[in-house]
Amino acid sequence: MRSILVLNAKGGSGKTTVATNLAGYYAAQGAKVALADCDPQGSSIDWLKQRPTSVAPIIAIDAANGPLRVARSVDVLIMDAPSRTHGDALPPLLKRAQTAIVPVVPSPVDIRAAIRFFQELREVRHLVENDVKIATVASRVRDGARTSDDLEDFLMDQKLPSGRRFPFITWLRMSTNYLKAAEKGVSIFEMAPAATAADREYWAPLLKWLASPRSLPEG
Image 1 (cartoon, rainbow, N blue to C red):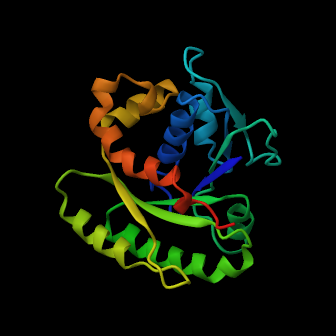
Image 2 (image 1 turned 45 degrees about the vertical axis):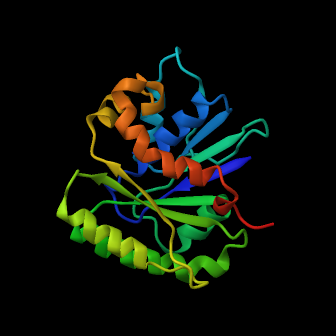
């Protein structure tokens, strides 16, 4: 089973947007997908409640109010972590994942929060035995924004405990398509291709990375 965790220690990072669109992408590809909402806010569960019967089904797991149990028949598990996850709450989530995606919004406040969060990830990494692979994506980026350059420099400078940098994968731009998708309970990959072509292009590097061995624990 493929397991992907989307997390950030700060609210408003676009975490649920990444989680729901990943779930919709894999479902549209024919995979049996489960979306585990670990956040008490329940945004991913709310998204699933709006999901129409005309698109591929996604299994809902309300992990904020019950155990995170996944059927063996599930091909892909997407986990939407709680906002502001810190300390002892991090290792149990990371242990469930092969891959963790950290969205970061390009603002000075969010960048400073991300610096602290990456340090936390380093500090708990020894408690996680599955060598989870971590990637960063820039979220809610405005085209041509000056802060986007600052964010890219910051992400490029982050290092894993091994000395390798955090893999910075792609930008996810600010787009009304994500609002439309959230309202309908679908992903941009289940909307008209012509209308979402630009957004899909930004997703392509992340989806390619997730399909590669580089995004999976070794062994």
